[in-house]
Amino acid sequence: MRTITLLGATGSIGRSALAVIERHPDRFRLRAAAALRDVEGMAAIVHRHRPARVALADPEAAARLRAMLDGCCEVLSGEDALLELAAEPETDTVIAAIVGAKGLAPTLAAAQAGKRILLANKESAVVGGRLLLESCQRSGARLIPIDSEHNAIFQCLPPAQDRLGGVERIVLTASGGPFRGRKRESLIAVTPEEAVAHPNWRMGAKISVDSASLMNKGLEVIEAHILFGIAPERIEVVVHPQSIVHALVAYRDGSVLAELALPDMRVAIAHALAWPERMESGVPPLDLGVLGRLDFEPPDRDTFRCLDLAYRCLEAGGSGPLVLNAANEVAVAHFLARRLPFLAIPELIERTIERFQPPPAPDLAGLIAQDAEARRVAEGIAASLAASGTG
Image (cartoon, rainbow, N blue to C red):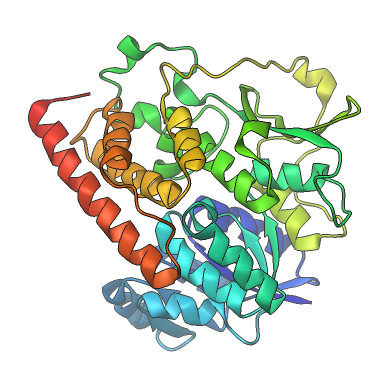
């Protein structure tokens, strides 16, 4: 029986994880759950799954939840509560699914506590990947990615100690999002509603916008480099609109291994929860006869510039990926609030990384300081872009 702490329990990945856990009550028990501020969502989780402890980072939301639950579950509050649950002594597995840079500190806490970590928070790797891997090495924590693309790479790489032996390149697939095939001039007036209408996946607003801009794939390139130690020039991206092939690993002998599955996060979550075994995820089997075809095409890097910005930050080194992520979070927030147009997202990011290029941070406090400064710079640029109507 594995005991689970679920960070980001009320989001789309959290809901998928709960569906898999509920399917196997003889193997998994939800011990603790955490989220940022979704009171009703967390209350529903408590009533259905009966965790011993829950936390909301927003103290006001936690107070409302505490009153709603009336003592049936311990309710913690504040961002420190997320760290406490991540290192919960009675938990052996932590699912890290808090979206954005806010997920870094609790993921690091889980790593320092030696947990088995199922990583969906790509920003933890992008912003603090070196610290995360060093913490895992010191504590003996096990890191298994559950982003569909990185979980696919994990499955296609050999289990041997030298995991990159014979590997020529890694290929990440992108759906292309809701704007695939469109040119820059047709994206001038797109709305947040259009950007979050992903054709294949049901995701939160921020990650859906990242998919529409191809920034999601840029962050995944950085994450693949960090998690698997492969050089940026050996990581490729292709657009695959069906979202059936989630990643490919090409070997020097000409072989290419791919992981195929329906576009449903329960597949990767079930794989990581049961690894090295296999178990039912609840996702229907893939029927290639019904599917009929698989299409691939190169990404349009002129229209969707965020992908190249990610490669640029990765190649520059230092804390470039941290600045990229912070600027993107600021840009997406302004777009979703209708303060900036969609095409201003890469413009804001590029200006931020040109203005702020810090060296590698030595510790979490340094990362937090750099992240705050990057956001300050990005907010100033956002105000300038909004005033000028740029985008």
